[in-house]
Length: 559
View 1: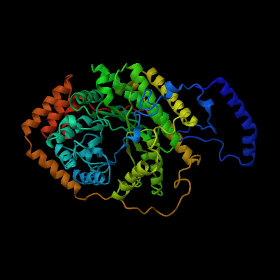
View 2: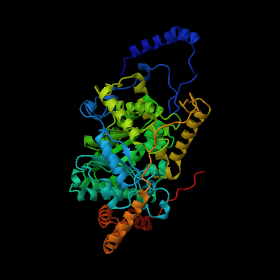
View 3: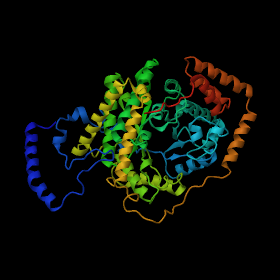
View 4: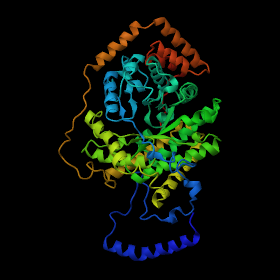
């Protein structure tokens, strides 16, 4: 907080500057446009000074790294002590192909796995189900049974490598497959480290890969939270994800607000289950987008830490400081990648990754230059990984903690983000909470409006996208494209048939029946799902049992 005398003097100096130096400069060389805006279409002032953060209390709003409210980072030394986990998202075709890609990335210096599943798996279907036809391995790896998971993780030291899994509606089932595969390798559950995305609320809001209605879906999420806190203590059982909200077209502030609102809702459900907030909150993690606007993204991450710490300490009365920490993974913005001049994506990704690092991320995925055209080639994914390694080893940005802290611009943007987030919290509360708000289509409508505005800015030329509506070229892009094994689908179908022929059908029936009874009651479903997986019940079979009890969700028409 600045002294009033200093602020008054600054205000007079600023007025004089505007009437003299600035006025003369503008007469000689007008600015390029009447208004400068962020990626989220918020206006940016010409200059930021202490007047823009005049009421900010340093200790209350910033503090020191590793101390409440964690605006400046969750660790006192941040990347001076430990670099972020370099976790490249990977998955395509069969388990064998993806296993080879995992091993290649680890050989190239990747420090954690991030598993992408194909659409059929994400929607709870086996490869041989009619609904899965044509989707095998296209946006990730197909996993229909424990056998696939065993092959996927073959030769990976699960007691040493942490794994992130991007799976949501059937997350508890896929997680159970991972846990059982680890046990078969001789790895104890308490040795496992990783993250399960398992964020069903953002599916209803943005990504739309839901199966069951909201209430039973939330029950399954809380089941994993409770099970993880007891048996897999180093695992983050939810990665509360703004990434997909942003990819759907939200602004940065909407991404921040809706993500944190979802996170607070998971905490409410955990407490309602009878869990102590300090029992599960330290294992909640977050997942944010890194878009093109460098400073806006950094401000978003800083505001997120501050809001989360305040809400956990003051609203939920968490006592353990680890419950106040917002730990997050970042992925560069897939929606920002262009099919035109794809090499330009290398530059976009580098800037986005740098913003994530300066914003204090704990884990990072960098997109590959060819992802607007196909799944990443081996060459493209290596360039994306090397981008992180250059930032880590050559840029110098890891040498100090929160180097942009105290910037008048960054602090003003951080404060703006926080204010906009709380304004959205109030609107969601007025609608009855997160689930009633999403059922009314509030978040979906806000995102849709923001996406439309952004696209109109591109279409009218107000917003320039290099290679798309500025600096265009006629010649087509010539870069190598990944080709999957053409025999992969046949191998996958043969393996699935073999699993069904050789397993104990009596054990399968008993395990599925016990799961049905658990779903009909109030018990934690995870132990029963684990038993189904051990019996080699398939993903589709387990989901089918759950669907008969919980039903399938159909999104209401939004008018």
